[in-house]
View 1 (cartoon, rainbow, N blue to C red):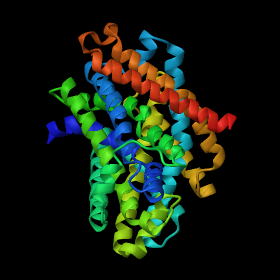
View 2 (tube, rainbow, N blue to C red):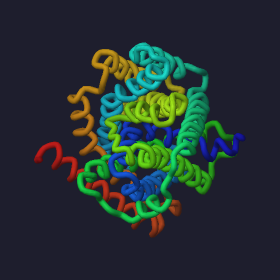
View 3 (cartoon, rainbow, N blue to C red):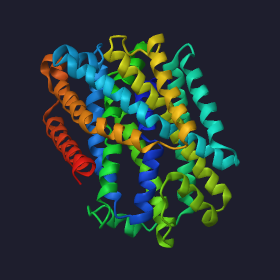
Length: 400
């Protein structure tokens, strides 16, 4: 079991923190609005996510210094600090959405006020920080939540009548009229450079606890497994929406609306199953997103990134508390915060991508563990995708 956790633990945590309520909303809309037509984009986004997750896994397994420290030491200190502060601001801005997702999932399933559960699970999340070994607790929690989500989505899929012929056609790239925004949103959220970046930190946390260490090959394999789980969960929600909601012309604006839409078609128990899956996605992101923001800010400020550090735990708590306050005060993620988070993300992500690529290519840093030709070419194509996403977002936000 310890060997399995050494390999899979970090990758599963990455999958859990990337697959949040926003990802469920996007994939629900893709299936409900365009059926199986956008299945292909899942595999494209997963390919690049896998490439960058593998790079970061290799960096984490082969180095004792954190990725942010390597960037500050070998390349540019201000860029390293800016990445840490930027990730903290983005994590804080989006945290309210994760808190609200938890509240809605439990509130809808129990018929109670969502804000009660926002407060309860924020307090629970902060309490988890102060267990003797937070990483171990988080790893077990994320594995449990991912297994819960997988069970719920597989059960929901069994109830849906999947058109495998149309699913096959969806593997051929096409962009139906009006779907470009969803394609961009899904690619940007699934090809998560912040998630890939933090994978290197998770590998190092796991490495500290392992007497055998973690080989580079096993670290990369674990990263690929995590990305595969992320893809399966994304496809499950999309296919369920395509099979059940699209034929009836039911459009949804959020993952919670999809849960409600399933009730008259499948019955209350199936709808509740979906809300349990939504809870798993929201609570795993509530804890994971805050951990990423707090740990990287700690690293940027020179406090280190160890999850056993009191200073880092304090910074993680700040992200959770601010998200809770916004969620309870507004009942939703305010437009102003979304704009701020998107604006920071637009200009931050290219720096993250270039930094990962530069470190992974550097023989000075990684020696013979540096990128081979395949990773160099695939990584460069990934940077091109990020550049296209950045230009599209800048156009939509500032020029359109």
